Structures are given as structure tokens and as C-alpha cells.
Image (cartoon, rainbow, N blue to C red; front, side, top):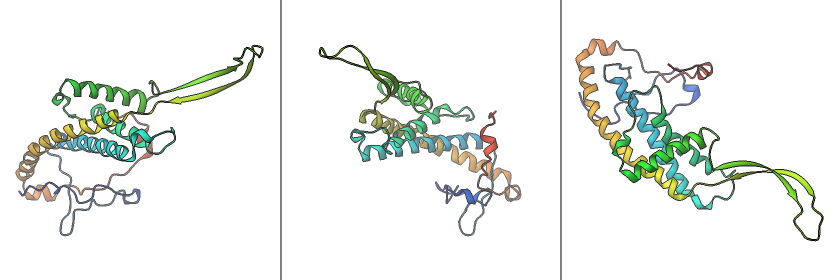
Length: 226
């Protein structure tokens, strides 16, 4: 069986209106869903790779836009930072995947950055428990030897600390190293899948169900995944 890196798809992004339709296999082909013994590991590896690819892409885009130029918490470029953190952490946090990226490839310095970024994702991007943001209730009091002590008014402020370029570059650098390792693992398992499919025989392969664009069920979002 011929080995082609992109033999598994020709499109990997679909619109909501495409739900339930056939996955594009290119002219003269049709795609069927394979579920051999090694398929789950293969699926999980390519899903992890996708997370890490996105983390690197979002971090690089933020660097290009200028990390140090951010002056307002409402600047759209900060969404790239949240997206980079979320994608990086998700690769390691998914409870339904059988495999994860191998953080053991990191040296001591990289491991420290990795642990920091995963914790930051948990406490800053996923939850509001962090040192990057804090809300204060304020009382404005007179502070002059020429004025009587008094409370002029009460108010509030929400303080945001912006990420450093070093932090953003760490996401990009670590993602790059993880991608190299994930690609190596994917290359090793691909021929295993090919052999498993070949062992099934053509009749069995041609009888497999068609590959369809996933259907998003809003009700399923609230359900606990097992």
C-alpha cells in the first residue's frame, strides 16, 4: 500500500453547513472510516499534533503582531495568547485520549517552562485564578495637608498584566520540539495502520462506513464524556 503523508484527507476544515456530508477524498476516490487495533492511538496522535500546531501558529502570530506593543486588555491580539495557551494545555489535559505529547523530551529548563505554561493555561486561560488579573474595590480618600480627611467616592478597577514576549516565545519553542517528536511517532505508526488495513482484505475495506463530516450536537456539549 502506498504511503502518502496527506493520503488521509484533502480538506480538514468544513463549514457548519457541511455537517453530515461526505469528507472530500479527491476526484476518483471515496474515504471510509477505519477502526483497526492501532487506529485509536493514531487518531489521538494526530489530534495532539493539531493542538500543538495551533499553539505554535497562534504564538507566532502574536509575536508578529508585537507582544510588547499591547497596551489595552481589549486588544484583539491578546486573544492569540489565550488561544495559544489553551491549545498547548489541551494537548496534555484531554481525558479521552489514550496518548499525549511526550514532555520527557524536554531538558530541565524546558520542563520548567512547560509546567509553568500548563499551570498558566489552567489558572489564567481556563479559570480566573491567577496573578495576571485582579479586580479591586477602591475608596478614594483625600491625601493633602490642606484638606480634611474624607472619603470622596468609591469605585473599582480591573488590573491586567500582559504576557512577556519571553513567555509567548516559550510556547512557540516548546510546541516546535513537541511537533518534531509527534511527527516521528506518527511516521512510525502509519505503516502499522496500512498493514492492518491490508490484512482486512479489499471486500472488508470497501464495506466500511463512509467518512462523514461530524455533526455538532449542542446538547452533547453539556454531557459528561466517558
